[in-house]
Every structure is written in structure tokens, then in C-alpha cells.
Amino acid sequence: MRTGAAVLAIASVIVLGACGGGGSTPSAPSAPPTPIPATRAEVSVSITPSSPVAQPTGDGTYPWRVDWTVVLRETAGLGGNVNYVDVSFVNSFGFETPGALNIGADELIRRAGRNHLDARGELQIPLSMRYRADGFGGRTIILKNAVNFTDDRGNRMMLGATATVVSRDSARF
Image 1 (cartoon, rainbow, N blue to C red):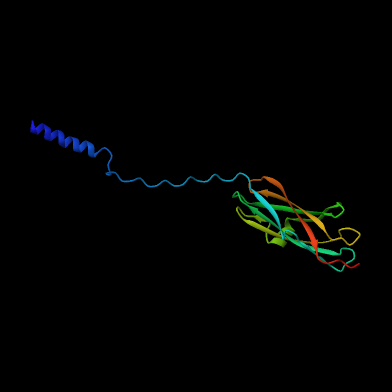
Image 2 (cartoon, rainbow, N blue to C red):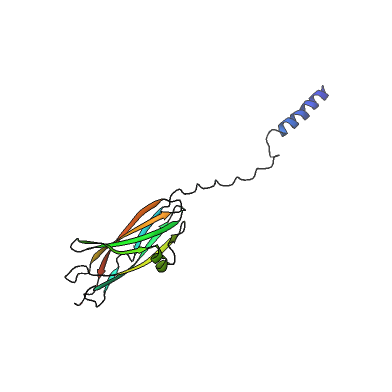
């Protein structure tokens, strides 16, 4: 009987030792899941400075000049091309001058060094314009910037940003 009890005790130790414990090696951690590629670019447009300042030119026909930069930022992980930027402005009387400035891809490349916005990147496009806001020497205008953009998957979009141009001087006629 002692032999049977001893065999039973040894068998119990063997079975219990195989049931869990720390005898196995841990598995390697799994790699994080691969992010799903973007199907469409997410692009924001802003203008810097946020309130551009008009400067007098000394020219009676176009007495004001304004300089600003259109800034595009992509956040989804898909780049694309700026096809053109079209700028119009609205004077203090509410009259709009459409197409006051139209910059195509070739001119964008000259001004910004490229017209391609990288995935999760930024593109700055410096612009300037001489203008006459109204017949009374006024200089305050609202710049309306329309940006035509096509992402690297062929999705085309129109983006826009506005800014109010201010001045500290008055133009001489």
C-alpha cells in the first residue's frame, strides 16, 4: 500500500507541475496594428499675418500694396498638389473684385519652391498684390483666398481662407 501511495504522490506532482506554473517561456509581444492609409487628404488653410497691413505705393492707380502668406497643413497622412490660388477682395462698400490675383502651378513653384504639399507637412505660399480699394483712397479690404488642391489619390477640393487688410497710413493722390 505504501508503494501505491508513493506512486500516486509522484503522479500527482507530475500532473500538477504540467498544469500552469511558470514552466513555459513567455510569448513575444505582438507588433502594433498597421495604421489604415488615408483615403483623402485633410488640409487646412490659414493666412499669416492674420491681419495683413497695407502699405502705400505712391502710385495713384494702385495706391496700396499688401503682402501675406497662404499656409497649408495636411494632417491625414496623404499629400497632394496645389493647382492654383485665386484671390479676390471685397472693399469697404461690399463690392467684390473677383480674380484680382490668380496664381497657377508654375508661379506657385517660383514663389514657394514647389506646389506639392507633403503628407503631414506644411506649404507656405508668399503672395502680394497692388490694389485700389475704392475711389476715395480707402485701403481696408477683405482678401478671399481660394486654393484648388488635388491629393495624391486624385481627390480634388477647394479650400479657402480670408483676412482683413488694415493700414496705418493714408495714400497720397
